[in-house]
Structures are given as structure tokens and as C-alpha cells.
Image 1 (cartoon, rainbow, N blue to C red):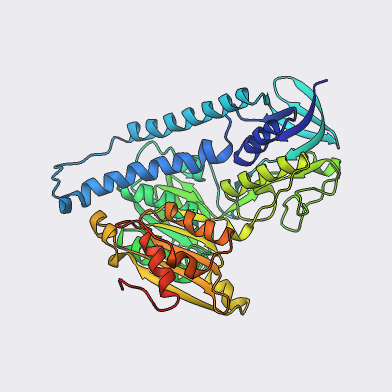
Image 2 (image 1 turned 45 degrees about the horizontal axis):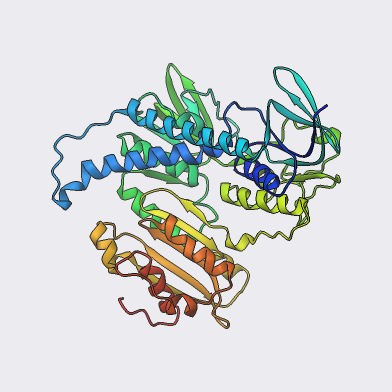
Length: 460
């Protein structure tokens, strides 16, 4: 019977990072993954392939609609969807192979199969053959899965989830997206840029639930200009395939007939088949694995990280927890600051956020001041011909400590890193405002927004 110090179940961003860090800390580590390729949903059918398609489709949109303003005449621009999809797959394959190499480099033993906990120190790998592993510690890192919606008949083809939407064999004439969250908007934008009519149905009266309302409102205006149709306050009651077409029904509205449907109403923790009931591992009221501040479950020796526990379902959040739990297992200090976990929507313009939203500060009755700076007043944004959007900095009214930063604009996903570091180190708005930012860069907008907190913006 193979024995290890740690067995990690799941090789997504949380699991493989936890395994590598634990091995770096001197432990004998195994990682169990049911899929043939490592990297989890994020790498195989999530973050990475979607960003590849977002980049390719945006380049096509730019060449078709915007290159002329730069003095570049392209003539007729066409999409070769098969090549676009092949590029996406090539990127994914390369990165999954990279994780295999990292496992070998760090001497992490990989087992292929479904990991099932059969005791506090025992994991059975159910694959081509059954293998029982002994471990001092077990880390559950099995991620999440697409949430279903009552009445929506997912067939894995015409009515599908994000997985299917990454590989449509042809551009649909009309795509209906159910859910105006991050996944729905990103994939909706991909197919809209490539020529599909895209209708987004959202139950709430706004898009991007949980994000700063002011930023989300601006995002809706911009995406509407780009061709997305939003029907807010729509309660979808049914979606099914009838005679080769999709029919979507909503309360109080005429049925919509379309070519494909993308169901993107959120994700659920993936805890099926893990044997948690038999092992006695407790779940919380939302079906997530319940853990304490050190990622310990109620069963000694069993830990959990990533999408299976509370918190934002983000790859980098899982990575931070993976590092933390690996350090905790070896007696090191570890801590994850959840106020400094950024979130990014990779539409164009990008939307990025870290810390508290203005809505949250109002609800908590925390006194704050805000500074806003528009990209239209930034020289680098003008040179890029990407001037839509703004930066918003929220700082405590009494201490000036940065509480939240929200950006909609070009390359916001890269810019938010500065704000995340500022929050991590407890910086004030004045700290950012007094720091030199290279000119001309988009990052100057963060400096100017920080100056605007005190009414001192220079260029607006």
C-alpha cells in the first residue's frame, strides 16, 4: 500500500499548487486527478481556453472594425474558426504538459482516477484499477462544476455550459446566454465578436452580481454598444431543443427561438463521489466543505481549499490557499487576505476589482471617500484608442486607507495588481498618489484616481 505524507485530491490551480508547495517543503506528496490532463477546470475548460478565444476574437473585431482609425487598411477580414479553436487547444495542451513537468521536477506522485476518502488517513483511487493510499494528511481540492437551472434541459450540445461554448463547431446565428455573470459575459462576447446575435437573460435587475454597481452599469452600456442584448429581470422557466432549434421561455415574455443556449448561472462545489458522508466530513448550508481558518475540516488530518470551500470561486484564490495549507502542514505561518483577492472580467474593456465595493461600504456604514479618473483623460489610452471606462479608488474617510479599487478600461486585469498590493500592505490613497508612475502608461489612471480621493487630480 503506497504511503505519503500528503494526498491532494484534485489537480486544479489549488490542488497542483498545494502539491508542489508541499513537496518543496520536504513532504512526500501524491496528487489524485480523475482527468487525463492536469490543471483542472481552469486550465482545461475554463480560464485559459476562454482567454485564448477572447484574445483571438478581440483581434478579429479590432481588425474588422477599428484598424482603419490607425491608418491600417485590411480589406476583407475573415474568421477561420477551426484554426482559432486549434490555437486554443494547443495553448491548453502546452500548459497541462507543463504541470506534468513540474510534478516530475518536484517529485509529486500522480495517480489517475477518482479519489475517495475511506478514512481519516486513507484515499482509494478508483481508476483502471483500485489503489489504496495511506497519508498523514488529505487535502480536498476538487473544484466546482456548472450549476443547473430548473427547466433548462442541458444536452451537452445545443444547450450546454461553458465547456461546450468553448468549442462550438460554427458561429451560431443566435446565442442565448442565461446568466449575466463573468462566464456568461466573457463567452457571450467571444461569439458576438465572431458574428453571432447574443441575447443575455439575467434574473436580477443588473449584470455582474456582486460587483460594484457603478462599474457594472457602465459595463452594460459599453457591451450594449458592442451588440450584446440584455434582458434583465428575466426568469427563465424552460429551455429545450425542439426540431433542431432551442426554445427558451421566460416568465411574462414571448419564447425565444435560437440556435444555441449557454447556461451560465454560477458554479457549485464539486464534492460528489468523495465519500465525505462516510468519512464524517461536515458541509455548510450551501453544500461547501466546512473549514476553519487553517483549512481544517472537522475530521483531523483532512483539509479543504479552493472552490469546495467558502469564498470567491477564483483560480488565484485557490492557489493562495494551496500554498497556505502546504505551509500549515509543515508548521509554517500562513495567511490568506481575502480582502486583497482581485477579480477580473476579460471583456473588452476589461473589468477588474479588489477589496470592498461602494455598495458594501454603504451597507456596512463605513465612512469613505472616492476618487474617479476616466481613461479618456489618459495619454496612453488615447494612443491605444481605448478610452472607455474609469478607475475608482475607495479610501477610508478618516484613515485614508485604501478599501477598494474598481477599474473598467483597457488592460484593467493587469492594472489591478498594483491595487491588490496596496491593500495587502495597508496603503493609503496618498501612498499611491505620491508614488511615481511612468508616463505615458495606463497605470497613471490609478495614481490620478488616488489623487482624486482628496480632490487633487491633476489631469481631470
